[in-house]
Image (tube, rainbow, N blue to C red):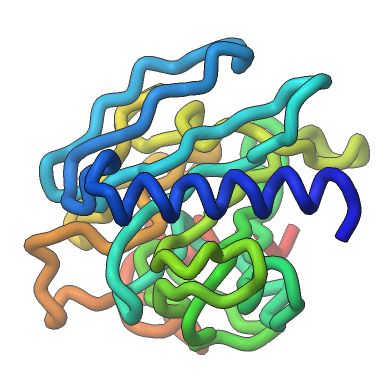
Length: 234
C-alpha cells in the first residue's frame, strides 16, 4: 500500500472509530464540517430526510485528498443516479470495492459531468446501461479496503469543459436547489437539464417504492428524462 493509500486507510479507520463512539450522528439531516485546509468551504444545508454526510470534500496539495463526500447509512440502502446518464463503468476493485461510473454528457455550456459511486454492496446496472435521474443503480455497502467496515457511499463528481478533461469537483457546487443546498430526489420535481445539476445519491426518507423511475432501457417516462439522457449521446 503506497503513502496516499495508507493515509486514506487511516481516515477510513478514524471515521469508523468516530461512528462507533457516537461522535458522528448516524441519522439524517447532518453534515460534517470541512477540514481547515480546504478552500473554499461551502455552507451546507441538509434536508432533514437526507442521510448524513460523515466526511466532506478535501482537495489540497499537502494532505491526503478526499475527492468526494461520504454518505452514511445501512447496508442495502438504495443508491440512485444523481442525474440521467450512461453507465461507463460497473466493476469491483480492491481499494474501493464495488463501484458504478455514470457519464452525464456535456451540458449546454459544453461541460461534462461524471459521477462515481464507491463501496457499493451490490451493483444493479452494467456498463452501457442508460439510467434516469433517481433510478436505483446499487446499494450502499462496505466493500473495499478503504470502506473501513462502516456502511457508507463514497460519492465523487468530476466536471470540466469538453476536450479539457473533467477534474474532481466538490459535489456541493452542483445541487439542483443551489450551491450547498443538498437536494433529495423528487420524482415529481422539475429539474433544469440544460446545465448539470444533481440530486442526492442516496435515497432520502419518505420515498415511496411506487415512485421508483422506470429503467431507461427504451422510452423514459418524462420528456425531461429524455432530454437529460439525450445530452449524454452528443
